View 1 (tube, protein in one colour):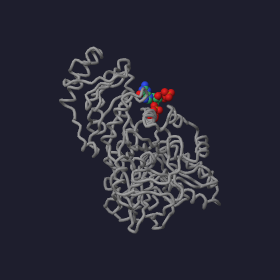
View 2 (cartoon, rainbow, N blue to C red):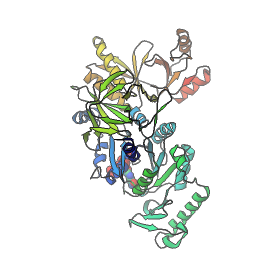
View 3 (cartoon, protein in one colour):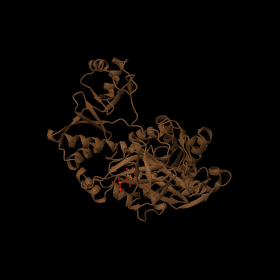
View 4 (cartoon, rainbow, N blue to C red):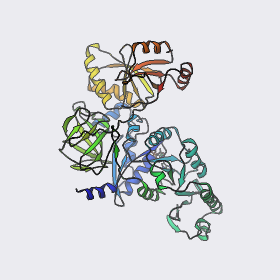
Length: 534
Ligand code: G4P
């Protein structure tokens, strides 16, 4: 492709992730979007995957059979000339560091909120990651066919709880039994829920006569009041603020009834960004239209078949074109790697890809070359993208090999599993292994795989800590001197524990927020860091 063709293709691409609290309707909305795009032909396809609520061992069986995760993939579909990729963000019991990290590879996010519940815990955590990256966030208030909170209160929640000003693009007309449709402020149209009809409004908008015999008096009154308030006190739509992640456009609807979804999708495609330049570690940017191929690994998915210890490395292509069989350089080692086997993941199938370009996500079969966060590129000058952040684990466990004769397998297994980035590995003062994860499933998967793939039986001793903080030591590499460590140890009590990461940087584990606050008050001289980079 020449530069003009590449630019045209790039402009069509959209990569986004959906953030939500479990049960808000992410799966249902994903499915409706895929149906609109013709990527699946039957409702229930995505749902069937999500409902695979098995015990860990059964879950492993499924992974084995399919060779890939049933719980995470990229789903691509076409709509109105655009090529749209939804990155699945695992949310239920498979919520983990991966979920956070996937958000470092998307260009925008869709936040699905259950309109009866408002903003919930997991949404808040995922929102924080998007906010940190300054990516555009589009909000879909779901389940209007059920009794919902007042729409103005929902907008206030966005601003008060998330600190995110919101601008309504569609507005609900009633909810639950009285749900009659949504009004689109940009198009000046009303979509009727039961009648599946569109009413074009005149110059007076909702204050004109068109709606008078169509919706109930109460709903019309509330709609007019709502619109009046939005016009007086609401935030106007501002594309620049949306693009910089400082204003979220809000839509109302029902994913289940596939209502309000098309109007949402069309606005989303209009305002969401095509893949842009990506920052490098040295502070420069890589232009997606560069003729040099570059990309980074944001997720590694293990093949659960112990006979083949290969894995699938998910790569977000940042510039240029990919061709199967091409040789790239791995920035971390400086060594060339041939990308022989590639795949693109769809909702219900995997297809081999021969070529792909900036703005696409591909999976590369890997025999252990890649680590999460790795950059790859063609050409002479080294390209290394800025490091992906690590996210603080919330669950910790001491891991002890049952058979000390197998210490080598144990170490190898721990190291390789840590490379995949689903768990963090630390050690304590006695050189025992401590792992940390964001979700419980990662801990279980870790144990299962150590035992099944590396033949290292382990004893897991769950630890009563929920928070981890790095200790700022002042040294360049973050390590502490023996003196510093001695001082630190004197400050620890039963609700804290000292561990070290793989760079020997000290961290303190705390039982809970209370223990952390208490520690900070007693030892203000110890500077604690919430996050560090991989
Ligand atoms: P998630 O991926 O965010 O966890 O949520 P999911 O889409 O699975 O939806 C959770 C539940 O909410 C499902 O019900 C789903 O049918 C329902 N739901 C999603 N969108 C809407 C909506 O717009 N209106 C209403 N009324 N319900 C909605 P379930 O009982 O758990 O599953 P199912 O038995 O209905 O499949």
